[in-house]
Image (tube, rainbow, N blue to C red; front, top):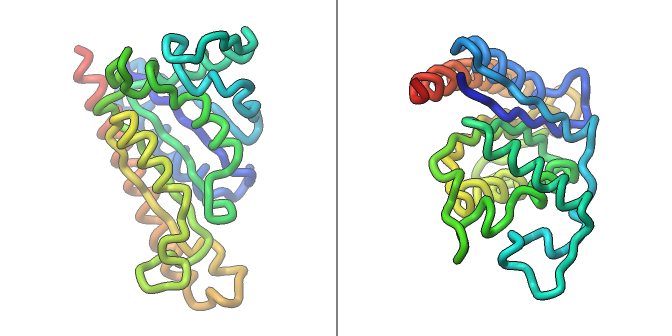
Length: 221
């Protein structure tokens, strides 16, 4: 048995490509092994509060003297971290909003990136090191090298930094760009490329979901 933590953050509940691609991954993962479990958290439909106290950025053993976050806020953070630590694979839908993360996803990230708990520090190792994290990055425009938007994706690099470099997870990124090609005149003529990328992303998500669902299940036998 293997567990996938599946996070969605798109505000579009009906035509979101990030939701469609993460759903394809999750379905393949669930079917890849008997007893595989998918824990789904919809960060838009059920948003988390902003981090209630600055001391929660740190594990208890690293907090400044006198720090006393509210028990309810500390309990929520503990539950979110335990949910992440209990997953064999992490899957996140990452639509690009104003060149950055949806605020709902940023709130989750602030709760779970905790030196001394999920990130290495003087009092801890890296409990998530090597664990797969799959990002489904959806961009409305063209972010190719040489375009005006080159380097303006400020969502994917942040997640690669925090989850990958800081927490040691093995990050894979599935992308689909130009998703606004059919509605934005400046992107006219790019709809075909967008649809081709979308079909490829769906295939990749299904294949990777099946692969990770089978691999992590086998590794526990």
